Length: 150
Length: 344
Image (tube, rainbow over all chains, first blue to last red; front, top):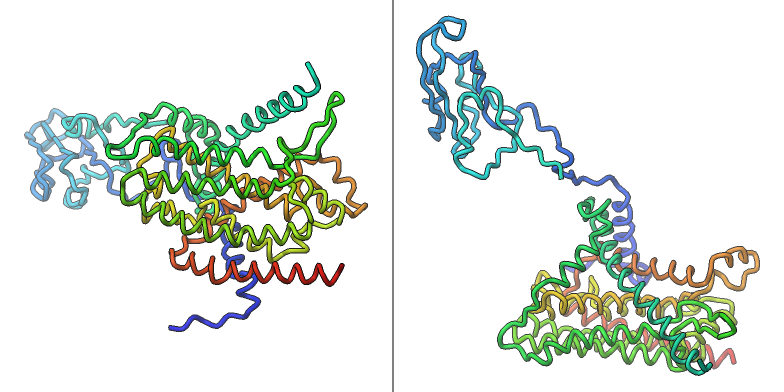
């Protein structure tokens, strides 16, 4: 393809280069897109699938989440009883291994009582792999998230 | 103390101390300014973590570079590997002495020149000594005994030699109008004629500006470095303090080339339109401030074009140099001579 014909003046005065420089100069004074992460956090979308949480008081230990989980990262057991101030089943133990979880959201969809849900937390890094396995207490009240400030 | 000692030793020593002291800090902050401005042009923030808005970043960088391990790879030519960064830095610093920063003044009865050394062939010395940096670059690339540095060195040799021709012809056009080779003399010639030479020699100025970017290995003409092609170009094998010497040399060369541009084409330390009486109120600003303002603008220009233009391909670079700039500069030289003969 032949180069488009340019006028002598355009070529000699490097007008196109000046146009490019004008563009970068305008961008110099535009607002910046960088988010200074530990100091400022962008709000995640409400539908964001973050770290799994379980509302202990709602769970009826139906095992549906354990069954549907493609990664087998949910383990729970329950028993019938009235210890929690209500009739029916309740979970005796509940483990979710976040190191295995793929955050697909199937457990949240399948839960009949909306007990298990994805929170908006995303800072799940741990030093010890065992720390990524959350038990019922952590799942209910949230794990200790380190909010780095500097 | 005799007058001779004071004039020839003390005053230059003091000037050298002041300029080197300021320069060391200034170069660090030019690097920071470069990172910041480039970031702004790309809608980023740049360094923000060390000090408010990253203002202490240069100091942190300097400390890091000073304490870094001094690695000399196996198989290099040790002697040449060691001296080549020194050649670059010495050549760059020597040219600094010839830059006229301000109008000469009198202090305690002693004449203090604006430049450390006002030599009557100043501009030739700058071009000559500045040309020595090429040797440092070529030797660094050769002695590294590695393919990328060698390629970088070869590119440096070809590029710097070809652009030096256009650069010198452009300078020559300015010198013909000025009628002197002294850096201070060139500024005084502009004062006497009452006009900056950029208005008399716009073409020469354009050629000089393009060539000076190529001459200092700056983007878009940074073929000898070309991170994306040659890793680090001629200083791929260097690290720590030796590497930072190359950096120091490059930025000093930037400052010197900008200073030459200002001296020849932009009236040195003078205010704009030095012959217009109506603008005399601008004389409140001291000459050195005018010079530094112009210098800062040129450094910004360097950064600006780095943020704007993509790197030239190697053959395009050579085409531009040999097929456009050199013929244009020779034609400009001939026309300048012709006009001067006709006018006289």
